[in-house]
Image (cartoon, rainbow, N blue to C red; front, side):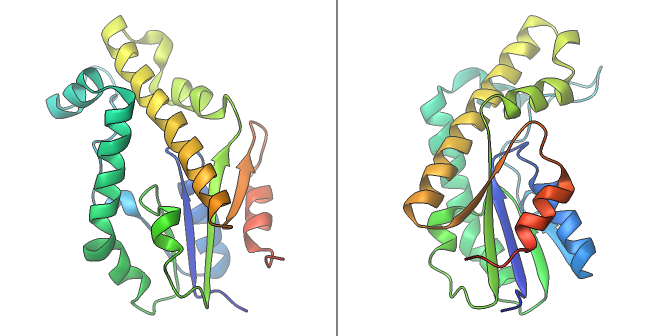
Length: 193
């Protein structure tokens, strides 16, 4: 079976965008991120001295972890029919990547000519990547608090996606600290057993 559509899901900072672009380049097709369709609410840092928007600050400052998870899951579910499903059903040869590709929703698709994979980060990987990208050490305590909350949500979402993919017998690939894009690309392109 040759996949017409590659779906790559997982948490923020798991490597979905990097892998999605590599797969699209290999196949000679377009890559679209679900983040480009609707973002929720985004990362709580910008390049200094620019501050994140007030609604992003309030989200991470005011919500508990379970509330952040409920909010992001509700957002991704609300995106499915009006935004994500039309791309999947378009017939275009495509790589679609993003956190909005929830296993529970993808499992309902006719999987003929669809290859769905979830990247699940090993312990500590997300935190290291978020710390590096956000330039955590140079941030003030308020900014670090927001980044810590974002990282907590990313780790919780990573766990959720891994458990859901396992429960639904969907393919997942563990991403370690040293996993290269080429290794992920090879695993992604291998025919499932």
